Amino acid sequence: MLSMPVPNLTSDYCQAARNSAMTSTTTAIELATSSASSHAGSLRNSNGRKNEVSETYTVTDHVLEASREADSTVPEGGYGWAIIASGFVLLWWSLGTTYAWGVMQTALVSDGLADPAVLSFVGSLQAALISALAIVNSLVVRKAGVRATAMLGAACMGGSEILSSFTIHNVGALFFTSGIVMGMGVSLCFAVISTVPSQYFSAKRGLANGFMFAGSGFGGAAISFALDSLIQKLGTAWAYRILGLMTLATGLPAAWLMKERVPVERRGFIEWKLFKSPTFVLIFIGSAIGTFPLFVPPFFLPLYTRSLGFSPSVGAGLVAGFSLSSAAGRILSGFASDKVGSINTVLVSLVLTVITFLAIWPTSTELGPLIAFVVINGAANGAFFSTMPTAISKVFGSARVAIAMSMVVTGWVGGYLLGAPIAGYILEAFGGTDGGLNAYRPAMFYAGALALVSGVFILAARFYINKSPLAVV
Image (cartoon, rainbow, N blue to C red; front, side, top):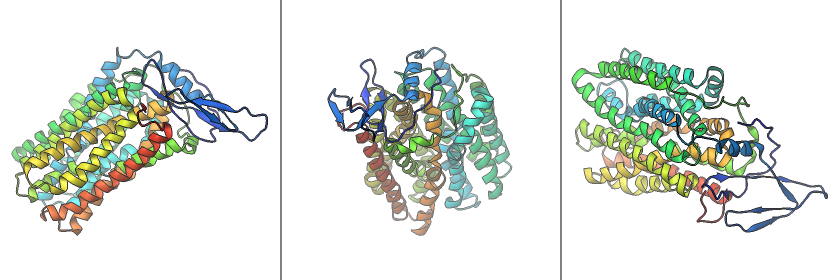
């Protein structure tokens, strides 16, 4: 990978150009000039038309050029598939466990430990630390390497679950073991998973990320069923212990497979000049808002179905279905990203999320509509989550994906930490967990409204990159 200086950025990434060999979105950087000796320039958009630019000229974004050169030498597979398999397993136990938190939360609510608004913070911490520690973890990856970082993450996840088995009667201790320690492990694994595949894939990057991130969906489904059965037969404590032992037994070997193709570039923690780019700012804000609704369905579906009179197994089954649909959405979005563009794919996922939150779930009191909600919302949820790394690397360059992705993910901390708990407090305000549809509906509208706002920002970014509605962006 080339190491080249980054020029000063005083305006924004402009219209994307389609490469004739592959559907990779790239950007250029314009520098405004006030000198009379400056050259007027022109840019070609994806349709080949010239746009005259008054008093500006285009300079090369050297990081983006380095990204394109590095991408031209990637093997498009090879050991990269071992990296995808490793990431699949790590996501199975990291975000898969977070998706299944609703099953554990329902059991702890039934045991009288705390109400859902409080316990949802524990599950939210697991995801929130991905964001809160993103920049710190990028330093850990550079200092320790991806293999050691992934193994430390797997050890934290498995160890936290074993420790949590001894804290199920103390909500404060559970916050530390199942929230903070588990979240540290999840965040370390995510720091590796979100950056290494781009070293092995370019044209197939979206598909590779889709297959890898599907691990969290399949894991969420399997863990939901397993936890429900283990809790009923052995109790909550032993469910935690078995989950921890299985995480260690399979997660540590998977983490050992992680390996860089080229050394992780030693650049700054934050590229502040990216915030001068309207495209980056729109994606940063839009994706941050879009994380607020992500964990509302898996955290609250078991409680909602119980309030309608269904058994706990039905709630666990719906969470499992949600996770399986999420896995399918991640794979399908991988194909879509490579064909129609990653930003377009994110936008479609948000449209589906809005429809399901505002039109389907608020009218679902029978199993049939609930299944429809779970399938569509789960697929959209997975597509949003797994497509963002592809979008960042395509739009801003694979050479800066570690920094750009850590900056974007840091912005997600509010949504990860507060998204589901806010829904819990809204639920308590309108009737509580046993209040039926009328009690849950305001929380559904809250989630749908935020997904809609997120979609507006992503739509603005998409048309800022390329105003053609048919462009691959």
